[in-house]
Length: 125
Image (cartoon, rainbow, N blue to C red):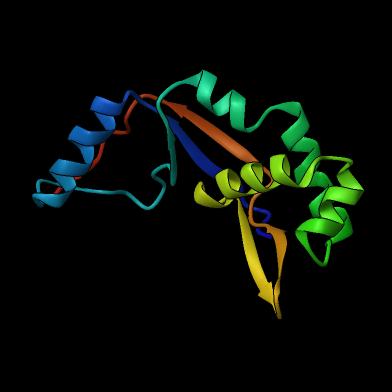
């Protein structure tokens, strides 16, 4: 896990799309300090990083569970619900699912977040 916070951006889908298209066309260059994770609203950010999921990240970090089943037991969450949450957290790059034989071990990549609102100014090429 990295101690450095990950930058999270809040921008509308349209703003995100325009920004990425400009990057793809070579019109804009992303700065190194750009947000790495983007959400379309503060509500979607809050939904993923709600207090229950923050506690889940703490449990993963503290316990280093050997499997999703082990994490379900530690967190007292149903495996099906937990699996969906872990997929969402992994999709956003907040956790890694490390293969260990036939099991997946969840590992926290980031436990600190810095939120930026609106698309960042990017440097022209």
